Length: 143
Image 1 (cartoon, helix red, strand yellow):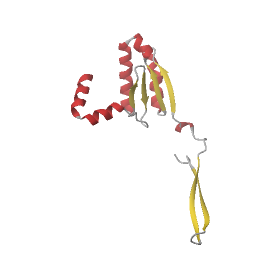
Image 2 (cartoon, helix red, strand yellow; image 1 turned 90 degrees about the horizontal axis):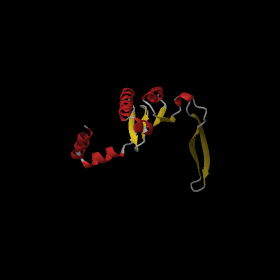
Image 3 (tube, rainbow, N blue to C red; image 1 turned 135 degrees about the vertical axis):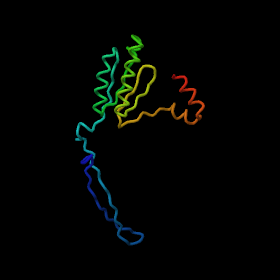
Image 4 (cartoon, rainbow, N blue to C red; image 1 turned 60 degrees about the vertical axis):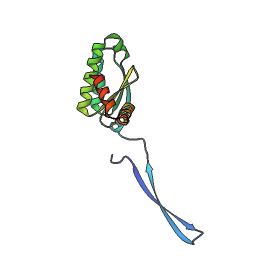
């Protein structure tokens, strides 16, 4: 991140009429020039899974490490649920390997992010506030 912000320090001197003293304020000006390197840019990219082979593009984008993937799973869901489960398991293994995160977004989309991002999951907050008994039933439902 060296060179991300070029900083200039300014000193502003003012005369305070109340006290008759000279006041000095320091300001730092940040240059937010958009000429950043391409590697530091985050990309949000949509994908559509129509076949298991379509997962390859998602995996490559995640391994690059700067892409947030919005994956439309509806076509594969309507076509073949077994292939969809296989594709999602492949995504989960890759996410685990790169320390990323994955979450469902409605019935038709999943969001997959690399390690620099975390997905806020409201259901986790609700489970924690209800206590361990509700967490047990949720885990049992998944099994």
